[in-house]
Length: 573
Image (cartoon, rainbow, N blue to C red):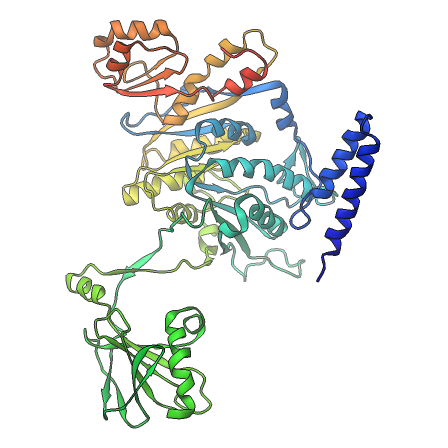
């Protein structure tokens, strides 16, 4: 079938080239024609929307976002542990800065963005988007697109992102994520029952939605390996044995020696208790029939023999299995109207050995359906902070985080809300001995960051003590005459954020000038507890300084923190 749209587009592009040639001396016409060409060459399948520009994004054109630490809100429990971070401000500004400190360093991202219900849950440019807004979906997509594009850059090579959503924007979000993260990297969509189906408080509605969804993507599906649930391997199903009542007939099929025992020439016995030399019965149907080697073997050897051997035969195929028997039994259907047979397999050798030592476990697939209606019904006061706008259970977020195998991972939530993600990270660490850290981003609309998010993170300190730093986003005008000096004042926040440390002037030092390096070399004995040094890339260390400082954890502060912005305005220090 010919692609009529493509042919039409090619004719239009050809005509555009003709117009360009005729108007090559008209710069204004050339600009307009190039814009038309760009539109014609844009993607013709996927999500298309009217793009909008946010005021918070426009601010960055004339200002440089920075972090300023609120030192009185710092919580230090154990100096040996890494710090967690709460970033107050518009999450786009926080993400722009995190892109400098955490590019490809975030292992798990969980977000619970506004669902765009038209009920004062989603604000765009300081105005709530109502359900009658003709640009309702495009504003939401513009808002999400710029943030998810940065999220993609932040994810580590084996990173995972999970996004909560309901039906309102589910379809749009899926297409957007397919575009940004790649459809091939979509792992699964969770279906979460969030309320009981028999408790409908609004009887005026004909329909009662009880489900929400979580879209889950990997940065690279081929690299990411899920931490799957496990269970103790059981031999309870190995309760069968097959008795051969004749010598059977031998033939070669699919390059294998096969012995067939027709109906009446063999006997299946089911024992009362499992035993290590017993066999397990499995139907050759469904995905086993269509997607596995067992099914392929059944199709190649057993099915073609049905008319020859009749129903109720068993086939002993040599050279199969990991159970050490050296063969595997397959049966064809028991009657002429049957469509599927069974196979009988022994306990795999490695499982038998593990069972004998009591250490055998097997991984289970991750299901995509969860009934958490009870958990959602009891979360109002989780963390000691009431929050009525989409609060999620700790149980759910722990489950999502735990799919990443790294117990030292960094977790990001840039729609932090009530702070559930931080709570979940610390609770999971306590349960499995992990050393995960979190970064939470939220604005302070209605004092949510100070009175809800931060309050919750302080409330849990008694049971889940951990280190925490509190930053606010701020701005420095690009037109400032003292831009370089002002930028330098915020380098400490960036270093602390990237490395999860506290620049305390004792164990952790920052060196920004040659003079500071010289002074430290002369007075190094005054720092007996020194652990790490963070040295500006503009500092030229002498040979002796380099040798001395390498006795500690020496880190060169990258010039990418603010160099782009400074170079842009011609004030690079």
